Amino acid sequence: RQILAELVALMLDLGQVEQATTLLDANQEQVGSLPLFLAFRGRALAATVSLEAADPVFAQAVQSSASFLEMVAVARQIARGEAANEAIADLERWASGESAKLAQLAIALMLDEAGEHASALERLRRIGPAIAESAPYRQQYNQMLASVLHSLGDHEQALQVYRQALEADPNDVVTLNNAAYMLAQDLGRPDEALPMAQRALQLAPDNPMVMDTLGWSLLQVGQVESALDLLRRSVNIRPSAASCLHLAEAMLRQGDQRGALAVLNRAKALAEQSNNEQVLLAVNQRLGGLDRTPEDAQ
Image 1: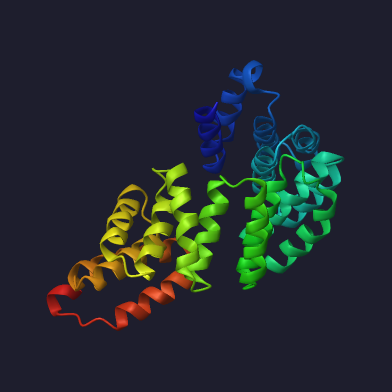
Image 2: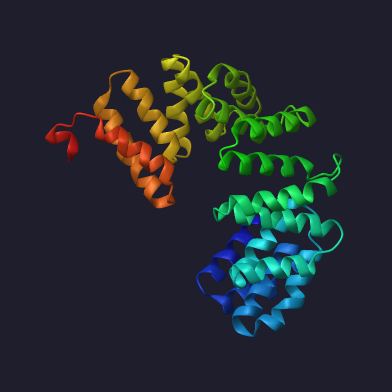
């Protein structure tokens, strides 16, 4: 199903609506009633017939979404089939009961990803009291709330929410990693970050984001060799602008300016590709402080 979903999504993104529809028809019996595939069908109808024809199919996809991840996947497809503000209004209109809470969380996530952090926080604050502590998506609510608070610069409040989430599930890798990274990066408390990052790596030993967090925390407390090993592994598995920047910092601590320069240039390219202005600024500042020979600059 995952491969089929990725293929249909790619076809729709490329404008190959007829081929996507044919593929959906061929697999109707197996996946036709699943929320994501209903959303695919709605998106195809929106592109080939009309939004009015797509509406009941999108509505069925929303109403049948039983988890946060399902609702997010459906919401993303609806947002690709119509304007963002219309997608938000439709999600609110179609959802009811538990699906209404899931829809609000999905909308908050979309707003946060669009940089509308204050609007995302307002929705989360509004829906929070209605989500029971025992709800299966309460942990995802807490993670999102902490992430939005982090984006708004309220790091202490975000940390408090992360700690609440860890009380509910001490082995949640995402929460452990995010809390540890914020402690090391934003709050300047790498000593507090280390136990969380180490626990996260025990639980997810092959996760490059966790490797990066632990490596960055170790570097902050002066354990350069251990940090360098983890940061290299993270970049080798899945390079990001931030992980490349962290690796370059570790290499500079060891005096490897030429190697660090190459990694910084890679970080700059990744930051530009992902529109990560914060990392791009840090990379440019670091590049400006390096002495470059003509050979290095090539």
